[in-house]
Length: 371
Ligand code: GLA
Image 1 (spheres, rainbow, N blue to C red):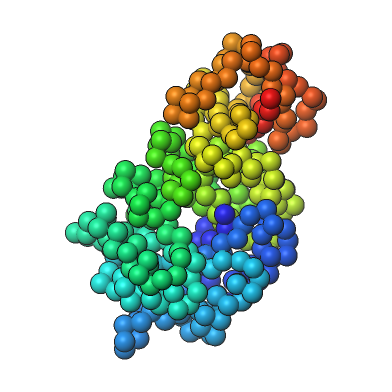
Image 2 (cartoon, rainbow, N blue to C red):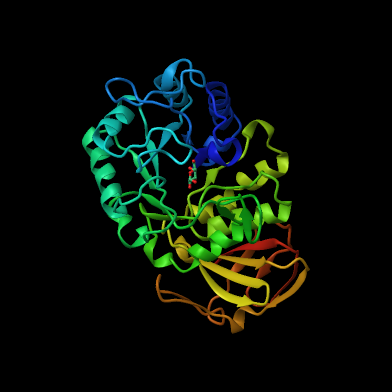
């Protein structure tokens, strides 16, 4: 869990923004609920390496250098992350790491870097598996423990080979702040939030503690409707996805803050079993997602992808939970569960009676079930 500069600021980052963000994370309660990694994405560097081939922070954006920023972030009890790319240049055209893996890894260690996001632009002719393995080895050799985030958009199926290489891997192309469909960016298109859900849904068997499927950073607070923000956040929690904030914390609305810091939702995401939830049912525009949790608890998420409200009538007794992957079986005829609604206020409920509710358009009802 953390914050990354890209979704809101793209290349417009600087020392003031990062220090202010560190202040906010550490003061506004977000660090306490788990957002601890502060990661600078693309464009933190100068356009050229120095004469020794070292990366240098952009001297205008970061006048005191990167160690100063890193020390500041650490002084707030947070962890510090940087970005680079396996290719010759980053996606925004800054110096890439190709051929400099060991040198760059030593540089990150010297700057106190705790997290590296490693992208996949300008990599013609490079073998992804080898490139990421090389960087992973270089980071280990540099000696400072680092979370290694692979960002090759799922092109080379990293879920099949990266669990010993890094800690998380993107399963999709870039997210954008629309709920469904694709956003045309001219030469390329970015995915709506739900498209990234669809792309990751079937990859659950590859995720688990220490090696996660990553459907990209959060767009909560960046302009979706409140229900869409709830749905986006809930689905990330149901998929045990990394929760990397992508909004401007200095301008966050109370509604966005409430969603992003909801402890019950976060506890579903961070549950120690680390099981990625599954889509049990798609019926017209409604989906039902289930995530087995520790202590035989369950999270259930009803999602409405249409623009019309939908009446739900869900009979638990006729819908046992059967998940072969996590070996979870629950027959509600045999065990009664109490139900808590995470976003909407609802009366006390249990699984003896069918669950009746109206599911608003582009929104979710997220439930936690306890025995
Ligand atoms: C790629 C990545 C994004 C972001 C940009 C930066 O598109 O997928 O997450 O890091 O590059 O240029």
